[in-house]
View 1: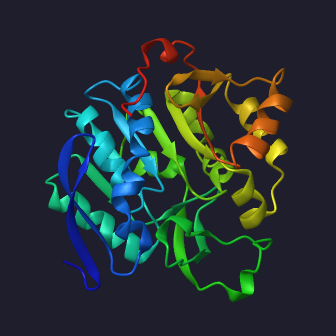
View 2: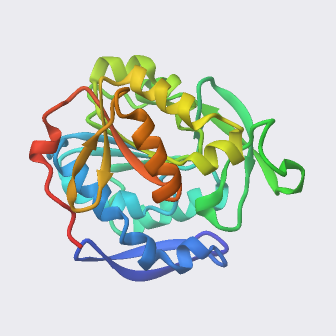
Length: 275
């Protein structure tokens, strides 16, 4: 096991797994709590992905999302993307410890709208790590390093993917850049896209306007839903954009998971996540 990486056993979605993480990473220390949020992700993927499907997990962190998704594609593939060196090492260990190496490929790279290299906030709490923008709040005080950057389109080509059924994106406010760098693949394969929409990180990490971001996503995808726990997913359109933003900012503490794509029928196949 890589230096500074530890492992522990935990239960996720009714199964026992081994999870690796960097010593001192509070996300790893509280992995059992964070695993509870994986049920919603798995429930959406189950409504869209066949057993031979291909999943792209952008912002895979230490691998909890990979463990939640892997049982859904026993004859498929997952490409798990994580740029932070310590977290990427833990992700690779999690994959190996659970015997998933034949189906899960790990890419230690960031995704954006253009290839190259970029500054990255190397946060002690791995869930708070993100690419650095010139407008990142309090940027001078944050520990940083440089990471390689590619695009979603380039990653699809590199792995020779002939299909793409599901894309999960959780990159602390840089979701729009991931979408822009994958425009060709998204249009070709029309996957269901599960993305975090968080007004706080958009403003803090990029000084981006949440309304403009949401309008951009609505222009990219004809079908957008917001998850509402055990209740049916809420369809988000330009007509109810104001009401959605109000609830997002005032009632939901700037945290929403959006499901975007071209498939209007997935909510009928969706089953509420187990509480």
